[in-house]
Length: 229
Image (tube, one colour):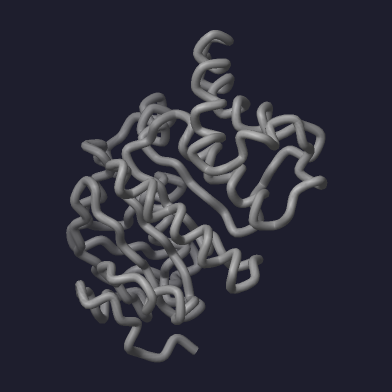
């Protein structure tokens, strides 16, 4: 569950990136976050992951108040989130299995848990036959599926996908979006940050639009109905 209450963020140089955003995302929702470059999307993501703290207001992420969270608690808060990036961020010298397993090893999972969980998640994203491949041996769409598997591996409550289709062609983009929709149907809250109007319009989901640090639209019609550039 995400709850932002009159959140602002002003950087040290005086730039006001977020100017009073309030929004609520329930467990299990699928939400698109859209807006032009410089609108505050990246800052908002960093507030949700506690990379940044709010200047004023309250940010609640899966029952953690990021403005009051102890530094020692931040890793536990982040385990409730899975983050998917546009540039995949895979480890080039590790195969698919070990790229995904790495996220489990970081939190101290046993090898028994890893050997049980990784094949299950790779099957979920359609990569059960690619576990021994290196990233360079995969297509862009397959690399993004590895990144999705890695985000899923520790069973997060929510996934934040930051421009997950930005480096993919339209057909692969649609495949990735349909995969994220299936993952959401299994109960994982999904926030997809994107500028791809055609993809947003294809899926009937809640669309939160921000511009100049403010929410300018928040609707369930699934239509991306304003200009982003």
